[in-house]
Image (cartoon, rainbow, N blue to C red; front, side, top):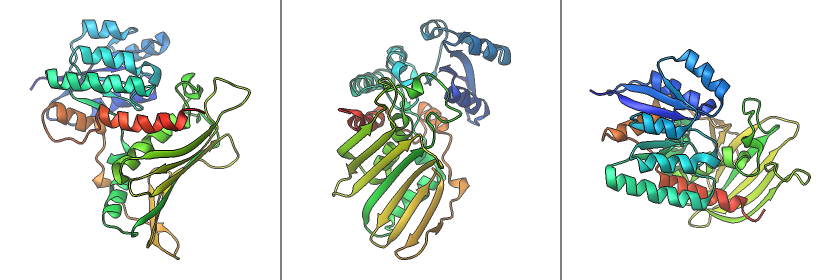
Length: 326
């Protein structure tokens, strides 16, 4: 069987992580990282020395002009998703894009339209890298919700707390910018998508985002928002950065018969009303990761659970409503 030729545009943390996944992944069709692109000359040179068989480019247009790609993974900052994705789609290449889909709702809408046209025209697979619904703890949470393990859902709290932002491993220029950074965009989007997937579509009832008054280009430091599910169940989102304490990224689901908590991404706990929470057994073997495997399966015409650009657009709608008019 022919090798699936994959290109990677953006060699930050996620780009390098995806390259390792592609190299380690076990598929019926072999996967080859054929070419990569990044605008950081020093980083690109170091990559070329480590992987001399992989072609390197400073310009993604040159990569797409010179290399025949089956799939392109896009891991550039959000501001650049739109031009890169649109160029890849124009060439009828399967595309796997980091979240959030775009840097505005208008861009996201155009990307969905272009992706759907490419899918109809040439069978192009388009996916956004939403990984939370594939995690074992979230799969178990979804099962518990479907089984009404804690009764009817009364309320959900979403807590996003970061003693420092960016975190120690996120040191780059854009992640602190008001234009395309901040914890709502970088972290909140994961939870927005997961909640939409597990509980249903969301609406923003109200939102207040607080930015540093003396730094007009710096991202938010606080958010308080109320969102609503069909049927009226409310989600209370509270986020803060720059404080003394521990990081907490968690969701607490309050039901008529008990509570479920997903603490710090993967620690699932539950308990009946009036009792303490206790750990819920989560089978690591139930993991559906990596998402890349699902994308390749879909390219091969096999079953695979992916989240398309339409899913990315629906999450982007909530993201932009949280950030607008603040």
